[in-house]
Image (cartoon, rainbow, N blue to C red; front, side, top):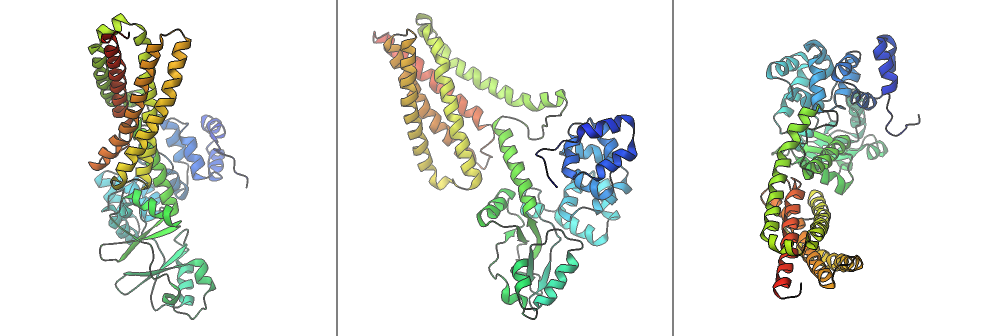
Length: 452
């Protein structure tokens, strides 16, 4: 089957929905992938999405719920009965079921847990005790494990049995009587081994594993560093309690990337493009007011040099160039530093090097862009001394941009605050204040020295 990028079936679904042709719509939906249906839902209003959702079979509905955002998921869940929800949750893997149940009101969650299979309910309840953003919160209880005295033949038979209820088995975990993890065996290694050989003899006795309380970002780094497909999760006593698969990690990576992207822009991570205007207004306003406060702080610096500006109006024309270039340079530094922190390439131990490096980059770029700006200003008829002033101010401000763009995320990291949290707002304030103060301060010095 040929797959087209970002396939959108909205134009097929809407006419059938408007015509009330439920049999044809149900047939069309049964042929679509859950992610395609989720994309269709993003182009429908809530009432339309609910009508379509109620036509889905429980297995497909369980997959679609995982493809939509939290707000719409709550709307869809509230549109079906408790019995229907139990059927949907029953089709989910334990980690996904735990995610959905954790969002339900207490009484509804209790009812669903009592309605699903008893063993599944026990496993889901175990997962619910872990914070959502930890390895325990991301793992699934379904896995294939065998005792250390099992043979290869017995292990293959166990995999066959477990494959009926578990998708994507890539490794078998070897445990002792207390469920402590002893090793892992990949499927390719398993099928090539002699049938009567003990499984422990071909197992990797030093497997990569993570604890239940490890942060999800650290889990993704383990996957990236060792190119893993699945990863066992153990409790504080080393007992095997679950596994995390690569599809869960991809979801975490996407979540973390967009979370950092939103935070750097001063946005609430819950906001979505199809939200109502009122919801977006309330989510965006707080950081805009913070930005307004920092803007007035920068304006107060300009006011200090009001007399200088009144005598040389050309300074007011050139000020935005200095501040703007500083802001752009700072954003570059922030992006590199935040990415380095997120990937584990940068820590507080090598902070001194990154500060020196970013200051050096700022100095070099400041000299080049400042000289270019001075020449262009001269071509446009500005006095050479003003061009020199522009050159010096831009050079200083780009050094400030490099230092603040790297220092502020490191300070936030030091205080155990996400360094992506609107670092750009704080850093831009530094470059605005630094740029205005340097430019206008030097202009005042030049004026008193009789150079202007």
